[in-house]
Length: 338
Image (cartoon, rainbow, N blue to C red):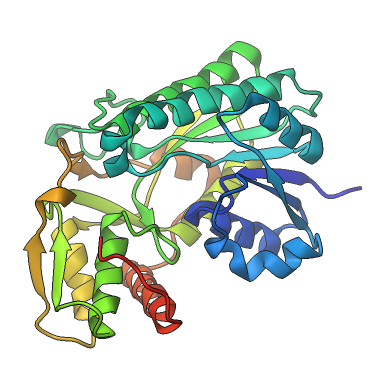
């Protein structure tokens, strides 16, 4: 019996690259990673020799904004599983580029699912990745956030993920496609993009340690409450999502168990630094016009269905994230202190 084939859209992102690592280590699946021709390979550089020799993993070029390219991707990969992770994924950027965000995330998801529906495929199990940002501004009495809390998106990105979420559920319910939607809460670790709070903090600390910038960390809103998960736990959850009795049209909240404010998260990172006395300064440009400030999940529906529990402690995640930036800077790479 031949091994299963899996398509990961957005394989060059943080989550996509870690998912590829997980599947290579824990399955015998053939992996097809969709990326755009201009996608940077930084997050999959450690896989390039395997990609070059097509050792269980290869790249297929496609763009969510080009329907024909998606048809070609599906014809080439013929997947049994699809992890749809590709997106314009930066909430802060979405305020500056709302139309690109809405087009890529909403219509891009619709194009992909429509191409799957019309393609000659073997009824793949499809993971549609939405976001906890769909819940937006949640009143305290609604915490922890269950799947049925009302959506109140607080950014164009969040609005786009509401569309992603509903489109995934629609294709599952209307056409019987095995489409399952997730709302993953904050997840981070090595390879996290530097436009996200915990990663820009870690990067700035690593730059301070290397003497590249003054000993000041610039921040946005430090009062938001977040529940953190490690990206390596997140991808193990995604594997269970598509393999443990997948139900068409279902939707799940997934997230970690460590809840703290952004300020407390920053204090944790600062405690790991070899430089003491680093100052913290609010940068108005890092503040969102509206913030989703209470992001605490109820994950009981997903855990009872799959048995998943996060395993990596918060401190380990933060240490690994800081070390990731230290290593990149030690290699001579240069970064903006954004």
